[in-house]
Image 1 (cartoon, one colour):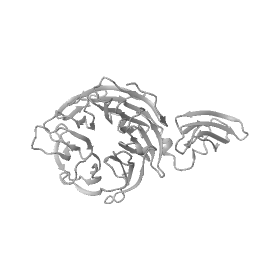
Image 2 (cartoon, rainbow, N blue to C red):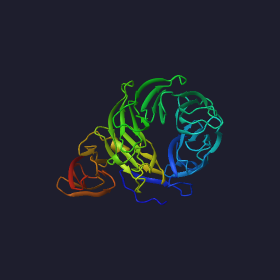
Image 3 (cartoon, rainbow, N blue to C red):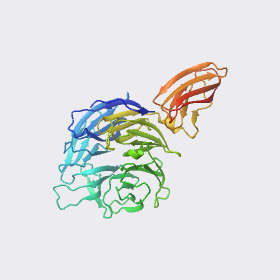
Length: 447
């Protein structure tokens, strides 16, 4: 399947990898993406119907293929794999097939190669998602289905394993009795945020992993759907989560009183009524979302929340709303983004995160820095939705044209102030969300 022309704004496609040699059904070939660092190098994993594909992300922003590990259940039905890294290993699971298992993949030979160190099908079978608490050396396995070798074992919403011996995870917890499933876990500093499907959000302290303590819960809330997955903000004060249900919005949860987590904002893409958000990761004030058919979406979460960038990885039309972008992972402070698309494979994007992190005002036009040092760069942002192309002209105080440019597929511009000291007028022309022509101007002082 060839990659078609995409709709995008404020992001750059740096590299893309796909293959049409995989077994598939209805053009579903790929699933989760995971990012990790090793020896100051960046790596990506993307899951497919057949297994796990490893890439190095080079300094020149290229996806360099490193190796492939076939899954225990290579099948067109294998549409959910998950990965987490720990020490010299990557742990890989799948949630389809009676022959699924835990794969422990050795990554110590990177950047040259990876290899399968061990497969455990005796104690492991189908698992939906994984999470690893690096400090506590604990592996969380969500929606754990028992292996055939243990017919007396029962399904568990979540199991927790010690990784003191990384090649032999030791079970330390199995539960819970009062919820149907744990779909996804995010853990930091012994605190586990559990996305529990139709049972909502639960927060536990796992300082004693054999006996977790419930800290707070959010079992009933507005705009509720299937509580799918989430991620904690960098400052630990906010938890973002998605409801994997048609038309449900992203939730922003205040954790200042962890016993009573409170949703303070709900938001989504303009087409949220006909869309489904899947995975999310916040970086600073920005939220990166894999939004299924809507592709990659990036939001500024400061009030009012705005969608500031997007890239439609799935340009096809389909009434089923859960094709497209499955996984997302921003890195290098949000300036690089990995996205996995179920049909089109692995994407590497560039994004000028610093431009939008510096945006501390809700004015229609944002200019910074101002004044600007002679020869330095300044940025102007059109701070409203729907703007996707700008025409900009710079005039000096006498009305002489100093510079002009057109900026496509973005709502901001960067100029170098290579002019004499003085006051300049920056005139912008663009179409607003109604398709109407607008002209705006700001003054910049060069000194």
